[in-house]
Image 1 (cartoon, helix red, strand yellow):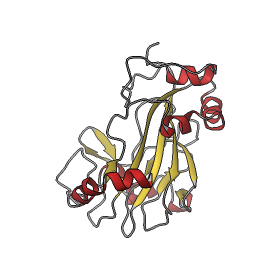
Image 2 (cartoon, helix red, strand yellow):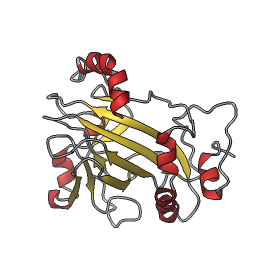
Image 3 (spheres, one colour):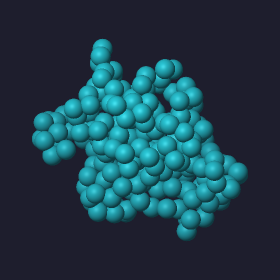
Image 4 (cartoon, one colour):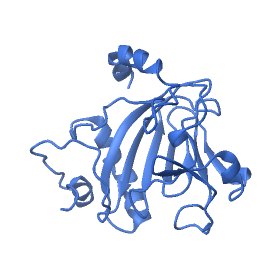
Length: 228
């Protein structure tokens, strides 16, 4: 990650100048995906190999009760900004599947000032919360602010994923969550996403013409293209 940051230093410097651009509706200008918007799926690379290591993959499969698909991985650099909360900094639900497991690995220390991932306990579809907060539309996505979410899930039940570099957060992001509202310190983290085979979500990966699948059945299933 340090080498990646060094290689992209000029790009990051340029991107930082537009991080506060609240007029960029539908664009998270406060986040740079360091591997690009669609990383090339290369199993010699540490980023997919990390997601596919057996302890993590088994957690995903156990949570779903079935073999899962790896749909996404990347490294996010979140800039500290002073603009009003927008996009994924507001409360929302992801829409890729009925259940969605995302894994976040902090590659920098993350405290309250660095925009920690924050989750409304019990709001996933295995939880007991059935009431939706008041919301507004940002494009076609429902967003809620802190006051609206507090009416449904009190702040004392918000789980804040703070921790030192190396902290790992597991979350079903079909539940209400927000993150990336960094005010004083940048946040750098690795993330990957697992869904069921039935998900109609598109992949956020670039597949090579030939991909040699691992011998392990669970890993091979996770890597097969959607619909196969």
